[in-house]
Image (cartoon, rainbow, N blue to C red; front, top):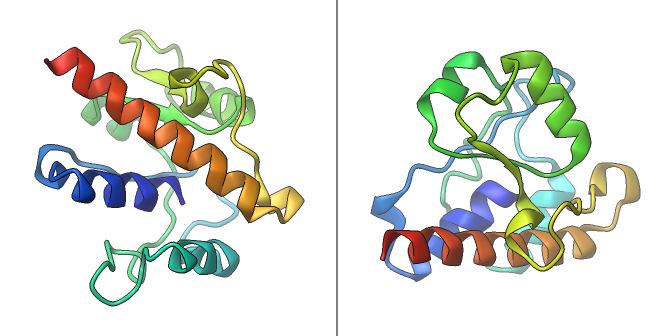
Length: 145
């Protein structure tokens, strides 16, 4: 969800061409699968992944994070501490200081995005993701100015 929320927010701010946003799993359970149907419905409820605002939702397939991803991207944003642990197993130490949690950019630093895979509560996840993405964009744009 976070990939497409971020892309939508950047598009609405006229910044979509300034960033490359991609998501990757830190496990292999969902490798090759499309966007989880309840997540896709939550995105569509908010106008993302629908005609005129597709943003790649329909052709997205999960892949696992790699060392090459770490090397390529400037920032790696994890949703929770489990993602951080798994990421460390994949890429080792974060020597370049690229890794953070999504909510680190909010007043809930160190907090975790609610995981709807376990709770089924996509509303809570939506709130966390939108808050985190907005704060992250503000952080990046503030450091660019």
